[in-house]
Length: 368
Ligand code: PLP
Image 1 (cartoon, rainbow, N blue to C red):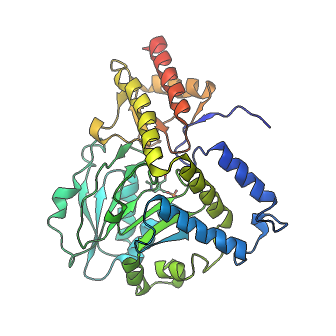
Image 2: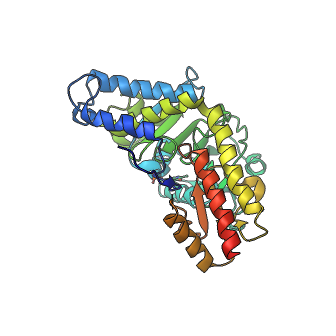
Image 3: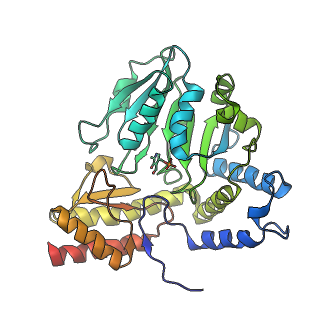
């Protein structure tokens, strides 16, 4: 069945490639020649066990971390659950978790850690209204392995539209990244991170599962945490994410999305494409003679979530409404920030951004 697909700029759940959706649809009816749907199959059946192991392997291969001492855990509760779980697993007595605050999700991560143990702000961009990223490097020099359990950073700030471009070498202090909104979108030195995690619903597939990539020394540390087994990272690792019934179909959709990413040319291709998409929108903003104003300072702008304002709120409302009517979905800014936000994750084609840039230019000519 052919249908016109809306240009989807939703912040998450977000756009997925049509071929991934079609493959997912087929698995609803029949999977792996078993005469039944994947939805009906035991998570302990061989085809499902194999599918989960392959998904772990694929993710590690895409980021070049296979054989580097990392595991992938498939967990529930979204990235928000990780805010609490990482502190429960890794905050040891006498040490603090240090948080880089660069947007509201990083604040939430910090607040959850405070409910578990000692958490402290390492650097914050709040006073700058989240329009500029704080420097991680400067604050790091004062830390030691003895007083710091880990440093936590949100690599891309989904709501505000900023993105860290580089990550410091934290030496023996584990660096933990919330990569929910930019995993697999660019080449980075992943080994700088002892752990990173991402809710699937942007670059990894639909909602329902969270990928936690974690180094084996942190897994060993988590084994000693005095917390229920179901919350312990080590439990997931030693049971290949099959300690309890995992969200099997969400993991399968992640596998399809990872295979799609590999077919496109992997992370390098995603980076090139993201840069092209972001440039189309930022050029429309910067070339508008001040009609559109980027919210974040240029060097810190995100290639995943572009945020901008119009001269007043009524024009912003008109923009979002007219865009929706013209086939562009999900452009209203987050309710806490206002303005306009275009989320341009891996599943959004370049063509969608070109069309949106055209709409922006047209709207400015009519209303500017
Ligand atoms: N962290 C970041 C950077 C996010 O963008 C989001 C959701 O958009 C979350 C955490 C929360 O994720 P979840 O809804 O999966 O708990």
